[in-house]
Length: 139
Image (cartoon, rainbow, N blue to C red; front, side, top):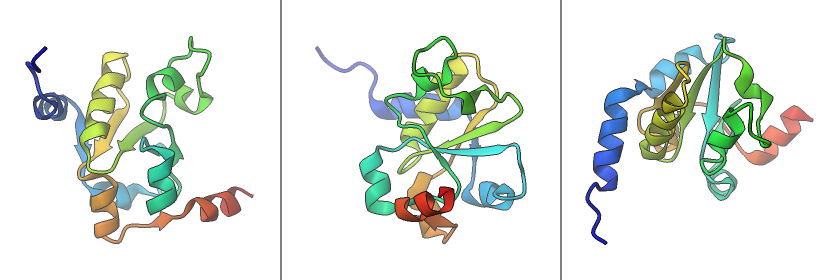
C-alpha cells in the first residue's frame, strides 16, 4: 500500500498546530519558572548515549499517551498537574511536534515542544546532564 501522507507532511501539520519554543525560550525559563516541565520523549538508548536536558523528565514516546491519561494503568502523576506547561523534546523536533499534537488531540492545552530538539539544545551549549548525574542528583 502506498504512503499517501509522508512523515514530513505529518510533521509540518503538527508544527502548524502546536506551540514551539526556541532553545533560548526554554533555557531562559529553566530553573526559574516552576510551571515549566521539560519532557524528554527520546528512547532511553538516546539518553544513555547523548545525555539529556538538565532537570528534564523522561517519558518515552511509545508510552507518552498512556502516561498522560489518568484512566490508563500506566498513568504517571507528574502529568496531572494542570498548572504546569509540558515542553517536549526529541532528537530534532519532529517526534516532539507529533507528540505535542497527539497530546493536544487528547485535550491537553498546556503542551509545547522545543524547535530543533536535543541536537539544537546541545549545539547551543544549554545545560545537559548524563543519566549518571541525574541519578546522583536524585540520590
